[in-house]
Amino acid sequence: MNKTMLLPVLMRPAPTPATPATRVVATVPPLYEPALVRQLFNYMALTYRWHAILVAGLTGWWRRQLVARLPLAPGQRVVDLMTGTGELWSRLLPRLGPTGRVRAVDFSSSMLHAAARRRTALPAGQQVSLHHADACCSGLASGSADVVVSAFGLKTLAPAAYPALAAEIVRLLVPGGTVALLELTVPASGWRRLVCLHYMQALNCLLQQIGGPLTIHAHLLSYARRFATLDEVAAACRAAGLINVRVEQLTGGIASVLLAEQPAR
Ligand SMILES: C[S@@+](CC[C@H](N)C(=O)[O-])C[C@H]1O[C@@H](n2cnc3c(N)ncnc32)[C@H](O)[C@@H]1O
Image (cartoon, rainbow, N blue to C red; front, side, top):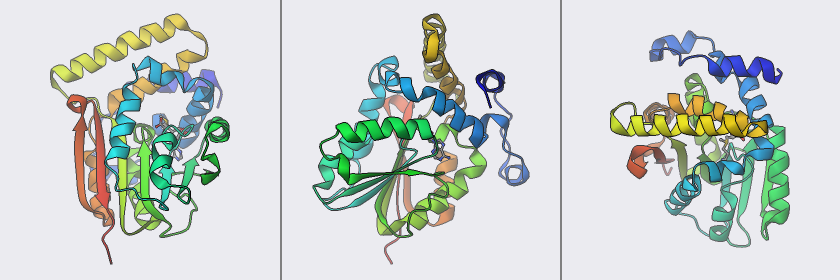
């Protein structure tokens, strides 16, 4: 799929939310087709680190909040699903000591190339391994993660895929293991939604003015606009068997973190 095919699909209005029953049989809306999402991130890989600047460093602060909530200990094994260019690693590795491991999963080869460059530059980079795979079927060994994390990857995932993602998390975690998922959550109504949408619109205009490869970042906003809560992801996690599933709002609800545990057997 080339860029001229990608852009019209991303510009379509948000689809009417399907009921859980219709979702089971519905085909994946074009916006969430894995091939399209992968292509979007392949285009974005070279400029992805600009994102932190575009959102005034907020994403970095939210990632810190995510890691601060994890019961990490030296020697633990973490799986970072939808790792991007490895934005979480510099916060995870100091908590894992010299024997801890991070296995980073992403389905965009360009993002993984950028991740490989980041890994080379990190002092503890040899503790990270990269895996080119879909987050919903990573191919990693069952029961091989003390902790599963994921930051900012949920909004481009089809809601119909939440049960598969939750099942994969359950498969990866050891008994008593922890999962933490972070995402932007544009409030569904009220003044916070208005503020978020206006901010996104302003950012969109700025990106169009700047032009060049940064323009592609405007498309992430199309996904963010449609993602209001982690409730459906939380429901999928409960249905898959995770316990103590709770969602915490950050910065007045414009980002949220979901935490849950695998039952101890
Ligand atoms: C917005 S970036 C987030 C990157 C990083 N975790 C961060 O904190 O900024 C989303 C990443 O998830 C990846 N991704 C999206 N859907 C995926 C899937 N189903 N399987 C694997 N990777 C996926 C994309 O390729 C992209 O690198």
